[in-house]
Image 1 (tube, helix red, strand yellow):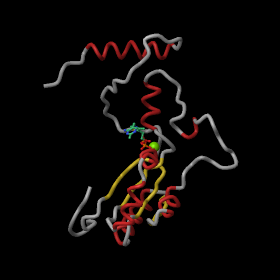
Image 2 (cartoon, rainbow, N blue to C red):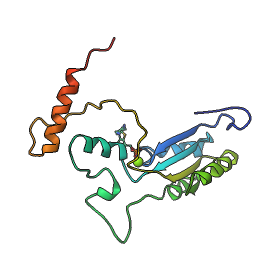
Image 3 (cartoon, rainbow, N blue to C red):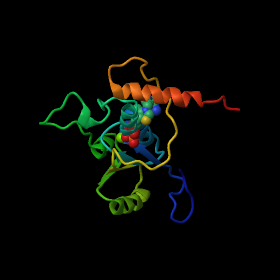
Length: 167
Ligand SMILES: Cc1ncc(C[n+]2csc(CCOP(=O)(O)OP(=O)(O)O)c2C)c(N)n1
Ligand SMILES: [Mg+2]
């Protein structure tokens, strides 16, 4: 999203991403610092690959290794959570942590005034979703000892029977 004019960001892109997406590709932040192509990045931090966790469970499998809380390895002395502000700062960007929507609004106004790429990190919910769904047709095992997987497989076959070739 980029906007011009009053209240806009003068052509500065505003990027909204999840914490997992940030981890998959954040080096562009460094590039924008080096090249002067400022971005504002809002990191919605819900502690992992939440939508994949949701998909995994919808296919009958208990969550594992998508949310940080479900990871097999835990370090009580040093939580695995990433400090996105510090991480972005280490690449020369600016950053601020926001603990509420009001703080995010204020921080966004600040971010519009900075001279380089600026990260705003806010905690979001890993389990609340806006309504409205489409089927996500990933493979579900045909054979499983889990009743939940057998149910998911049956649902998949029913949904697949309704698929048609798009035009
Ligand atoms: C390059 C790439 N790898 C993997 C995926 C599969 N994928 C889709 S959504 C997602 C999770 C993203 O997590 P996050 O950005 O934190 O968003 P959340 O679901 O938590 O809101 C993954 C891994 C992808 N789309 N692209
Ligand atoms: Mg996430």
